[in-house]
Amino acid sequence: MNRHFLFKAFRDVTSDPRDIRFLAEICDKFSHVEAGIRRFDAVEPALRPKEAHVAAKTLLRSGWKRIGVPDSDIQNVGEHTDGCLIIADYLSDAGTPLHTHLIQMLTVHDNITEPVTGDFTPHDPIQRHEKSRLENLVMRFMMAGTPNGYIQTALLTEFEDGITPTAQLANDIDKLEMCAQAGIYGKRYPHMKEKLDEFWDYAKPRMKTLLGRAYYLTLKSTKTLDSMDRNPPSP
Image 1 (cartoon, helix red, strand yellow):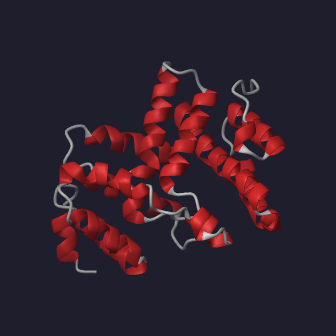
Image 2 (tube, one colour; image 1 turned 45 degrees about the vertical axis):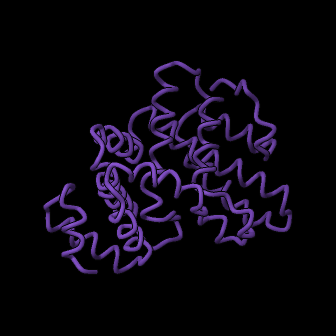
């Protein structure tokens, strides 16, 4: 990819040539990332977050596409975020600092960066540290025109690091929503049971909190979002 373009697009984000070299390598490997950067570079910086939220509602989740869910029924990134927010309401009390922090983190972590980078899955040839570095740079690029963009960048970093209790619960919720959607698809497409079970199997050992593990069992017993209990079992 033309590095001069990247220096220009990311001039308010980084002047480190190593970052530009990294971005160029990623763009050479994943053409859709270059397309995403070019798309949003053409948008006024102050409008990029809004445009990203709109774009998230048309960006299909790659995992469901990979296993053959019909395109007309594939959940989009915006719907995934909405589902995460619903689960956050189930697992924390509205108005508490925990709930507010969860909502902020879950709103940011997919809706701003994925319209640029695409929805990577564990099956894609990108390492976790590469994905985190890419998303951090893209988040700063997307928020460069906003006065408090550093707050959203910090939320994404906290989510990706997964060290704080709130970030660990947010990571669990991200996977719990995936399981809930797998349960919904299991009802619609019984012939996909084996493929859908992969999502449950992936999530189970990666639950980081007692509350997440407890709610995973609740979901597994119902395998449908509609059956969620508003009073989840205590850890």
